[in-house]
Image (cartoon, rainbow, N blue to C red):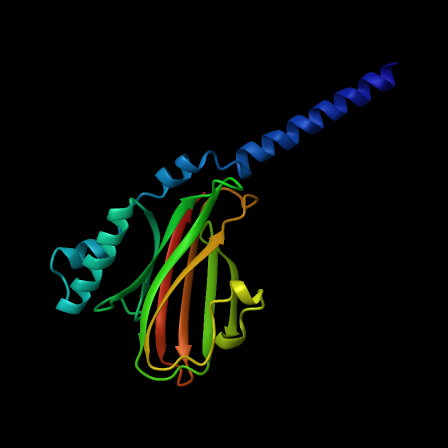
Length: 204
């Protein structure tokens, strides 16, 4: 009888332990709470809107800022035509949305870009940090980085000179631990010139 009670107590405390771990490290709370925690101001955007930048930079800032405000989106990332802060123009935005089907949140990236020359190949670089520490880093041949079903693909090389638009949704896994995540991505062409440069930061 005592052995049975001991087993039940051990099972109970084990369950309490795992529930506590889940609540402390993995329970992100409702999507509304996550969105609220990620409502922040982009300092570079504010400087540009206040007149710190040339006309083309200001035009791109106003256009994307109006887009975000019109749809009441929570922005967590920006895509530019350069990795250098001064004088870079906005090409896109990444926002956070509630995932009504699977729970949690989903990221959605909107991107408008004009290629001046044919893009037949290039390199895509990605680095992610969590809590201020490096978490993941990798690079791929841009035209070979997707292995999804044909209907889900968004990369179709080569790209002839012209304007292109993409909307890309990605589920943010519910199993990720709480904390601050930062990501940096860039795309270079065959000559190693930077074509796109993106920065994102979000809190779970």
